Image (cartoon, rainbow, N blue to C red; front, side):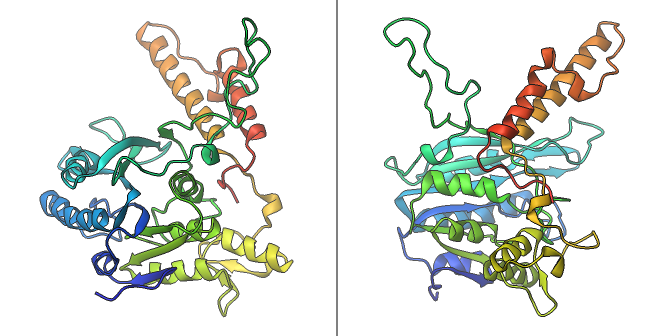
Length: 363
């Protein structure tokens, strides 16, 4: 197969891309393969055939990874005839059979989704992190998050008065709650299931260095390529859908088309800021409002805020259930009022004020 040039996105099948990449040449592969659940951009297959097809793709991924490289494979669940099969359960042994080593099973919480009637509603997806070898790259400092008690100090002993935590923050852990790229999200394109840029930034900053090569075999509308470029990494990708491929190229170009239109609001705002022009001069593909707004009017909320919000909502729901099964009247308070001693509400506000960069979750 023909080898693709660096910093390009192929229009075509991912296997054509991967088979054109040299052995042991890629630092990071991060992708979300089609879930095989009948979305508008998928063709439903029998589960066994789907898994076998993924086995072939993952074998190529393992071949092209460097010994220090990582693979992050984000998957959902296969649903059929009332059954729900987590796809990571099927992928885990495939990756182990390829000689790769599991490092984390990351849970990506989703606050919203379809409501089930005959089982509990699914509210998470997973990201499998496997490495090619044991001497893999991992950099914690660039992805640390604020401590629960920032600048906490020891109050006794030989270390009295000294910090008891890392001043750069803590390990973000394996439960992530980056907001869905859906309605009112400035990164939203025409793709129905795209990665949040901040989540991909965490993966790239934690496992690669500047100049490294990042590959997404299922590039979609180009999120991995955009983030890799923004942080000084090279990228390669493939996308079989011509419309999505075109959007990805427009995001990378960062320029308006002949109709002064952009693929999403974020690309529009970036261009408006760079050229010192008002955002209202342009439009974007999924625009609903009369005109695009400047970034100064955006509501930027970090991942910590969404986590605190989810904790408050779950706490309220579980308290209401406990009250009901004990024969007590269910609370009529709003979720935001059901925080014990106001601590969760304060945590949500603190998450916003402490975040140095925030998450792009609103227009």
